Amino acid sequence: MKHLALTIIVLFLILCWSCDSGVVVNYYDNGLVREQGQLRDGLPIGTWIEYDSDGDTLEVKKFNQASKISQISYYQNGVLDYRANFNDGIENRIYFYPTGSIFCKSTRIDGRKNGLETCFYRGGQIETKVFYLNDSPNGRYE
Image (cartoon, rainbow, N blue to C red; front, side, top):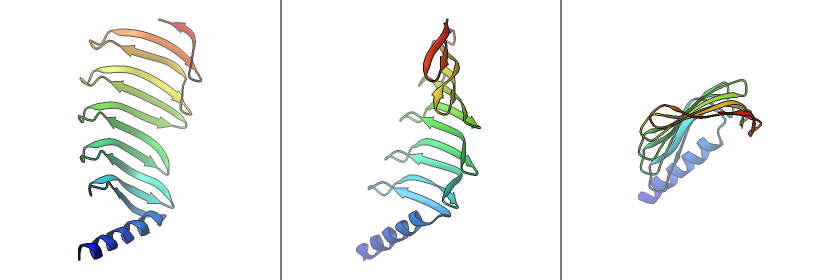
């Protein structure tokens, strides 16, 4: 009976994975959910959540018409790691210390650092300001 139930579940997952619209749920070997989200016309839409093998949330991504509009990532202990917002290829990202205070703020264009990146000491004072062009420091350092 267990084998029949497992076979049905595997077939269902294979069918869902091959679908171009609907809910998608992928599992770890231990049976816990690895990720879940929804597809429309083969593209992600809405909220997608990725979990670690213990069931704790690792990342939450939001999509609007297949474009990622936001992403939140967590440390293993559930504390916020970084938060990013996307708009027309521009990503504004904020990284956090495990204590919750801001570590760095940066802007990326098409995945590469561009513009001012500001990093902070744990107490909140500015540690560095670096200008980037295509992932390389460019110009002023503070």
